[in-house]
Length: 199
Image 1 (spheres, one colour):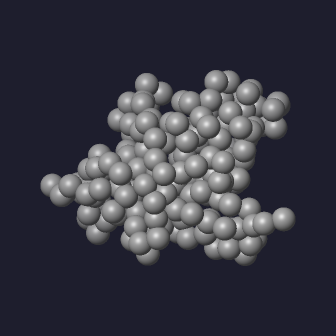
Image 2: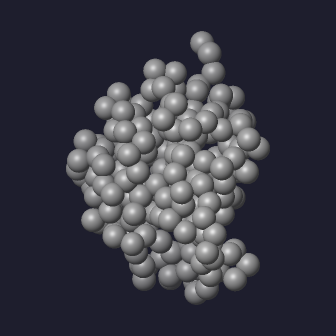
């Protein structure tokens, strides 16, 4: 049996306007250790905006998601429209605000967001063929938007503050997924890399 072929979709380079670099690196390291064959993809679209990561303020620059994602990929990346579902066994999307700004409009429209067409088509194809979909950080909002029956609640949780303490704002996000086959009790869990088979 050959290696598991995994597609990883990036949304730019940098937590505030693209892919969270630590998450994408962790995904690639763990896939490599598991012996997977990884191919990186990104949509060929402009970013919603560009953020100076030193000041956390938007700039006037215009940058392309595919070009910026190629920084993480060291140039070994393909345009998302080239992804073939028949040649891929699983899909993973790391987090970062690029998911909410470039792969979708969730950052500005919330539940009324739209999803970038090539991202939407890819997620729907993987779901329709019952292939695994792994979503990190904020990326589960894409499943909530596109997969009927998947509902997520993203926000602050006082129980998590008790567990993690103050000063952990970035770690306090929670998600509730329902009704999902693997989570019928609607349990709460930390918002990290997760996979749910939603119907």
